[in-house]
Length: 71
Image 1: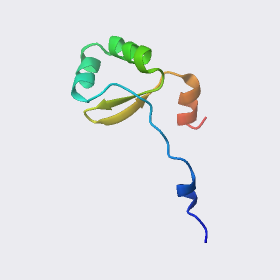
Image 2 (image 1 turned 90 degrees about the vertical axis):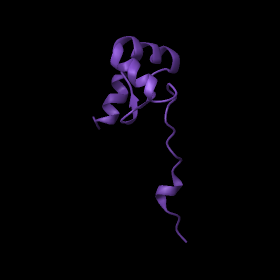
Image 3 (image 1 turned 90 degrees about the horizontal axis):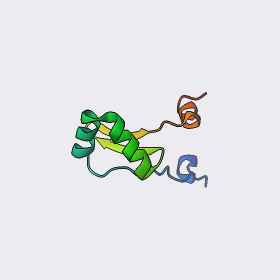
């Protein structure tokens, strides 16, 4: 009996980020730079933003950006 290879891999854990979606989205609209810098200080890079339009993993790390874009 062969196990499904997709189930054999450990699940991907999303990074931590600010709670909720309304307040973080409003903070991002009001002052994007201050919001992003504050979340990086608090949660690290990368972090998860649960925006009103859905969850987004945000990073400014060049090495992670290259992985995401397959370079």
